[in-house]
Figure: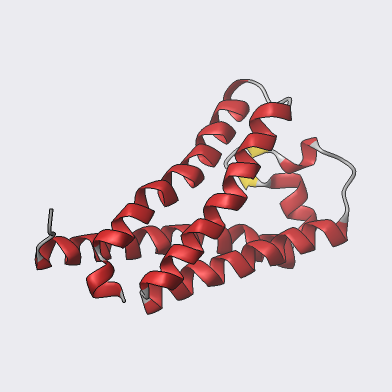
Length: 147
């Protein structure tokens, strides 16, 4: 079924909004990990939860590397949102999906988080998998406008 112009424009806006959300969700912990690694280790993700410090010992180098990785992934998402090229968008979303599928698997299969922290972590990581799964087909629908 052929998508009309307004349908492509809606798909493009949704893809851009999703990419911006993913960029922010990577840039915030990235900056936190690079600029305040001890705080990131002790307090991430915040809001009364503390997931990283449950895996001691603290390693400044590792936390800063993880922060830099999240910064790089956030820049990729932000660039894809700004440029809105179909190929860049699909590569960015696929990269995000590969990382987050593995990340979700590791946490769900091996973490000892229980209660509200375990549920909130699984939901947050599941959302990071669900978003690119939704956006990838949308990026194809918007492809005549994207690239």
